[in-house]
Image 1 (cartoon, helix red, strand yellow):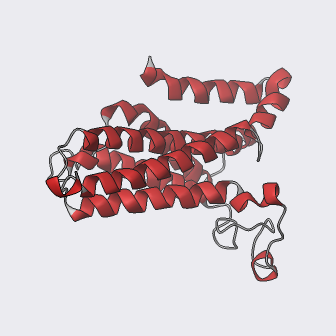
Image 2 (cartoon, rainbow, N blue to C red):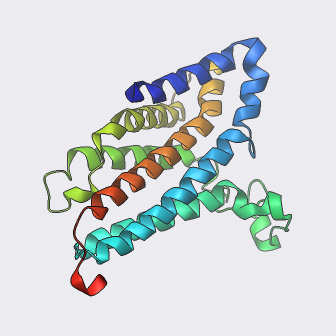
Amino acid sequence: MHYLIPFTLLSLCFIGLFIPATQSFMGWLLDEGHPVELLTFGFLMAGGIISIRTAFAAHCRGLPGIILIFLSVFGLLLLLVGAEEIAWGQNYFNFETPESLKAINKQGETTIHNISGFHGRTEWLRLFFGIGGIIGIVCIRSTPFSILAVPVVLIPWILIITSHAAFDVLEDYTNIPNQLSFAMSETAELVEAMIAYTAFQYALLKQRAVAIIPRLESCT
């Protein structure tokens, strides 16, 4: 049943956007500062903290340095993206965007991803995450760094994320019906939440995998 969750969520979101009676509610769920974005933020922050803690745990178990570096960088990136997701708390703490940043930020916010040149290109980041997940499933499992392999339970989430992002990128170069374009744009927020959840689950599963390895005597 767990394998069907990402497909079901995306399907329900599409249906909700196309049914007039539910369009307003679905739009509210997906809007900035509303439930889906807040869930994204929560999963990203939790995943980041867990990943960094797991890096320290890996150090105490004598795992190769590359594993420690990967888990640390992965965790820091999750924290960075989580902070970006809520504009570093700007709407909650009501601080002004620095003038130098406001001048180049498409939304006038304290964010990096809305700076001219990056704004409107987040589908590429979603695609890179999906491709990275596929690499983690296919290529790492039989290497000395197999502990970093993406668990098979996350395959459906990775497939949905990659497929949606690939279609979103393709849309930049081809014409698709307006209704479908609207639905793809709106559901991008849900896919970002799926990325956050997948990253959180990955961090949690890696924490459990590292925890069963005996600690070094120097760390006891």
